[in-house]
Length: 212
Image (cartoon, rainbow, N blue to C red; front, side, top):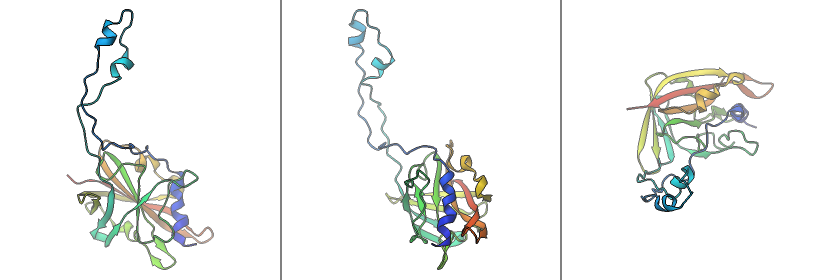
């Protein structure tokens, strides 16, 4: 087993802020609620449920396109993105053992550009050598990250800071908790390598915010 896999298993202990809405892309036609029936029926007051039944918002909106590529010029990263979910045991899925050069986007969280923290995970190395996020620890405040999306649009993020955390003290809230701004978190392994367990003892996390 390559060394990078076990290291990222740390993320198993991290919970998501919530699933992405099932299908927000279909705008719903406007429809005025029918209040006549309830107001003319003797002895029947229109409660909140009756008032809401049949209501359709006049607003529609397009879903944020899914991310397909990531580019980090400072460290020479230019890669497609895999889609990640949860492993059978409910933990956060990580890129597969044969996907050392391709990071993955956690699809049960926000999409890059939406409000909240979008999370992208990648391996640091393998038995064959450095992996896609090997140089992630080199990113500093002001460096830029670009995420390209399925419709051809792109969104840019600016690094705020890069931190190393012991895996026993993974900052779950800072990585996955909802925010009122569009943010991006990049996660890989780092720090000291424990040869007895064949895994790294820490995580490298890059915190970035959308470029306005």
